Image (cartoon, rainbow, N blue to C red; front, top):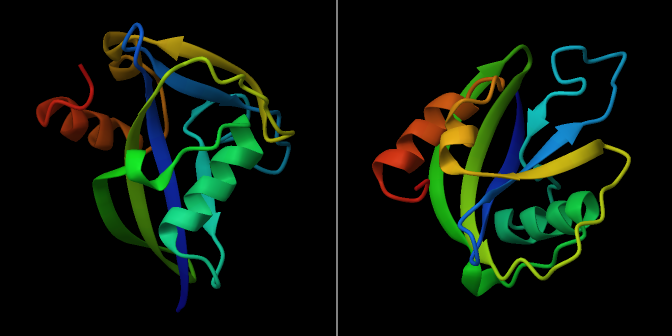
Length: 141
């Protein structure tokens, strides 16, 4: 079984405590992800640490450079999917909100949502359980 590592991030804007949610672009080959809510982040390359891979993905997908000292591991899990075994880490960071969001081809739009709006999203697994955990520990308020 092949190992894949992925890292995503929940970003909260300091000024109004809203959270950055991206909407995926249209993917004909992945209708389950096409034009659906998503978090910044993605697959971490073999030569990268989880932090370095996450920072690269966030720069590519949202144009934001987050300092490592602002990143906090919020949730981690492993799961098997077909021929892959995945290590999946979710980080949390608070940013000033002055940063300009610049989307890559992978996402067509973004919104800053309240915690209640995030909790109500129709989003793929495992995000609902992760959001519930983050709410319970005080990171999604």
